[in-house]
Image (tube, rainbow, N blue to C red):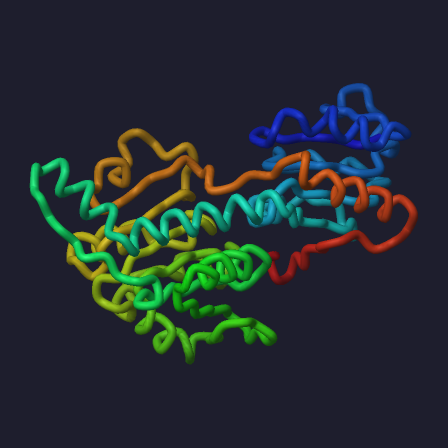
Length: 307
């Protein structure tokens, strides 16, 4: 049997998995199911402890690139391989979102929108993209794809990660020692770091003290990467000119949250990207086949590292 549980993914997933793996029985709950009969679990934002009784589990497939919420479950079955999803469709949609908002910030669309609301004819001279430096924090699959898209239309791209990455097609920086030099060069910063104990609140008051004056921020990683109060203070003090936020500490973002009405914040409802059965099904089915036949699944998570 395969257990499927998700509170937010594409509703086509269960039927699509059943069609792709007709030899398995798809179940959406554990009601009446002998726990030892479940060979694989495909999950997104599952209730803590849901998987603990599954004594014969061969694979936990997470329906997303990020696994911070999943690893917060302290009652996961021990020793079961956990795989994250590397979906070409999700990657393409993320690249589109980052490119769209980077172009909007580069061409000063937020400033033009404010000028329209105020009835001001505020001409902003267009600049070529090579005059704008975009810094990407987080150089996994998504970060590299976004870097390629941005470089492809002429932006200067820099990358930063907590540990050294080699073989990148653009200039990279690593660790705390090199972070200041990286931040001082960037006009637009894109957050794509995984959320771990080391990256939580990494964008704090000190971070905003180190950025280039007038830089802008796009957060498509996790809401808890950013200290909300420090972000608002940086905007109010004109150290940061604009923030595009697609992820938040609490989702949906509460109606009373100050982000909704701040004039220098663009809010989107965590829709920068999403998994798609049409493009991701091949990996899910391949991983289940590998796991039940004793082979190593693709894109395994290291729980100790947090991603």
